[in-house]
Image (tube, rainbow, N blue to C red):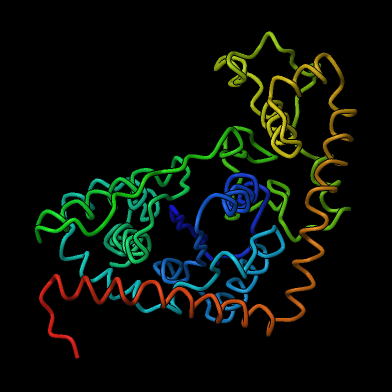
Length: 341
């Protein structure tokens, strides 16, 4: 069976964009793939993290995976630092990757900002660790958003160069699995910005820990415009025309959220609400969001009240992850020429 590897950083405040753009798709992939879902705490510390908050955020992400429907008895759920093969393979792959490849990574430039000299070395080599995450399990497919496609391409380049340098056909070249139309959920306060946990305004996002009243309040306050709801004539191939979306980004963002939550096409949803008032649409959207997120929220809260249960899931997942990754790492070390104990 083909193998999926993916993960999320434990930086807290998982939101609707994370769920619709990633986690919900991961739940569905369990039917067709051998799935490994990681909480990438090694990636998280490329930027300073408070240790206590990191530990709590790791448990929160694990709880969100399980609450959303990832089955820990089938799929593997664990924290990246619990399997040393990630870090060990990353060093070997650091010696395969080339400086020029990393210099072209746009995400480092964005995250480091103007003062790149002050950024951590880990942030610079982040994409190599990501390659190690994937290749440590010989994963064949990786769900990625648009912002991670470049890193996956680097993973393929590293795998290909390793195979070429050592004259082996060892690592598969992982294929991307790009999310559908819900892959980009935008801010509730600015439809031109991606929904983000780093946004200063908590009203910009719906957190997966928000209760029903909070969800209703945030959607009621979500930015709209004074015009009636757009109609089907503004769409092409189930997507808003660029000029229409540029003029009314918040309207199409809320419609896209509704379409994604209801598993319907954007065209169907636009047709249903065309010409109506935003107030009526928001009431329907609120009911749908509460019905979808409410059960996840309830289970997350239950799990977070029982951290031992979460830790047991992570420990069992880590044991299974190590059973897969360590033999692959041993083969890599043999290929490279290390003398093994």
